[in-house]
Image (tube, rainbow, N blue to C red):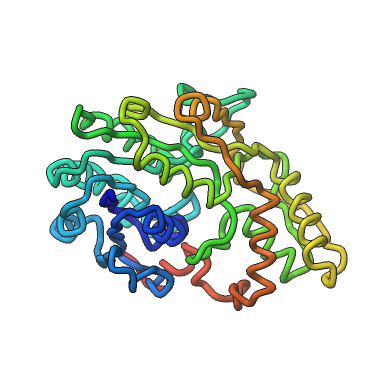
Amino acid sequence: MTHVCVLGGAGYVGSLLCPQLLADGHKVTAFDICYFGDHFLPTDNPDFRLIHGDIRNVDALNEALKGAEVVIDLACISNDASFVLDENLSTSINLDAFEPMVKAAKAAGVRRFIYASSSSVYGVSDQPDVTEDHPLLPLTLYNKYKGMCEPVLFSHQSDDFVCVTIRPATLCGHAPRQRLDLSVNILTNHAVNNGKITVFGGTQLRPNLHVQDMCDLYRKLVGIEAEKIAGQTFNCGFQNMSIMDIALIVKRIVEEEMPELGEIDVVTTPTDDIRSYHINSDKIQQVIGFKPSHSIEDAVRDLCQAFKAGKLPDSMSNDWYYNVKTLQNLNAA
């Protein structure tokens, strides 16, 4: 049993990851401000502890870190669109709070720190395969700050404090704390509930990753040999596709899974979101042997099943599924 502290444990990934870490035999502490609630977390499990707190509050953070051996840092104001909020909120959480958090973890005796960066740090690139040594070309403060935090983390690397950074692709699929503001999930929601998919742009290349594969990677990193990951940065995104090609997959799968909806229309409209990059994830396969076992098609099927089971009510109108809308409603600061 390893004691794992998941910072941001009540988010999209954390809500799926925490129960799986428990099933793996670990003790889990989730630390989260819980903007989206906590009703979906396994709070009745004796090996699970939930601490409501803000990562900017070092005293609360120290309580969560007590006894932890591994930290998985998922805590942030998530994705590029979130920076339409108060810029000070995102700066204070995604940048200013990061080094104090790393120092607190090291001081608490944590031996391994796993940081969730983002493949969006590459911005726009016409390289056919963007590897981990590609220059960072951030287009937004979100991916700028993600990139800035990486060397900060590695500056604290030591023999007894193993640090590793993951640059995941855009996630997709079903999780207990569902997000419907990510590309595959957005397109699927609209296909199911509007009978129409609107593609913004369409030619932009985006890497994708099933949320279950993201969880499987973090689970692997908890116990893998330190020498394989210490001081390393890994891309993790295996289906590089244009937005239009993703839309056509969504159309096909939704029509197969829910034939009663009839034909799903696909229309295009201009966009100012020009992020486009094709990431190479050979390193993570070669160094730690990680390969995905799920696909975009699986993610769309999972979401269709969730819709059919009534697990995603009011998906077009309930702000709970949308990070920015929820934070705006809460006047988060």
